[in-house]
Length: 335
Image 1 (cartoon, rainbow, N blue to C red):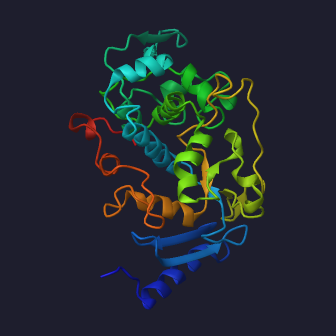
Image 2 (spheres, rainbow, N blue to C red; image 1 turned 180 degrees about the horizontal axis):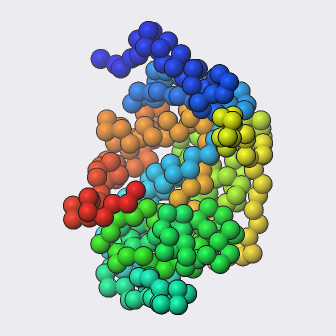
Image 3 (cartoon, rainbow, N blue to C red; image 1 turned 90 degrees about the vertical axis):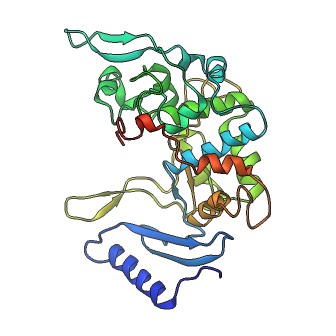
C-alpha cells in the first residue's frame, strides 16, 4: 500500500508549522517541510514565514552539512567506476600527500606557544575521511586546534577559507583511534577533484545534478559557485537569520551572495581547491528530496523519476550502513 498522510494529520501539521513561524515574535524565522515517498510523490508540502515568500519548489537556501551527503555520493561513484577504494591508504599517500605528511598536535610547551607535534603512526583511508576517524580537528569545536591556528583565524577557518585551513592544520589524534567532527570531508573534496580531474562543481553537474535534471542546486558564491545568482533563482534565495535579544529574526545574507576571489587559481587550472564538502551547496527542498530518494532501499541508487542509475546498490548499502568502528563508536565520540 502506498504511503499517505491523512487530511487531518496534514491540517494539524500545517497549523503546527504556521504557529511556529508566526506571532510576535515567531519561534522560527521560517520553515519549509517537504515529505515525499520513495517514488518522489509529494505527500505533504508546506512553507511558512521567511523573509521572502517561501516555496519548496523555488526557495533556495544553504544546505550546509547536507553537502557531505552529496560528496559521499560523488566519491562512491568513483568507487563504482574503479577509480578508488574505501580502505586503501595508498590512495591518500598518492593523492593527498599534504594530509599524509601531517603530524599530530598533542599540546603546547610550557611557554604556551610552542606546539608539541608527534609523528603519525597509523594509516589514513578514504573511508576515514567520511566517518570522522581521520584524525583531523576543527577550529570551531576543538580549542587546541583553534589555539594552533589562532593567528588570522577570522580570515582562515573552515567556513571562510576551507582549503587553506586544512593545509595549515595539524592532525589532532592518531587516525583510526578517535572520532571527531573534523576536516575529513574537505580533504575528500580535494581527493575527488584530483581523482576525477574536475572541480567539484563540474563533477556534480556532469555526474549527479545533470543526469537528474536538477536546476536549482549548486555551490554558493562564497566557494566559487553561482547558485544564488542564476537567472532562474532570481529573488528566490532565502537568507539565513540571526535571532535578536527581543526574539525577532534579522537576515544576515544579501539577496545574492558575493563571489569571493582567491589568491590562487582554482583546480584544475591552479593548485587551490575552492569547493569544499563540509558545507557549500544551496538548493531547494524539492530538489534535495528528489536527490535523496536514490538512497532509499527500494531504489538502491536509481532515480525513481527518470530511472537513471546514480550509484550501485553496494554503494548505497555502504552509505546507509553505520560506519564507526565498534572500539571508537561510544568511547571517543565528541559530536
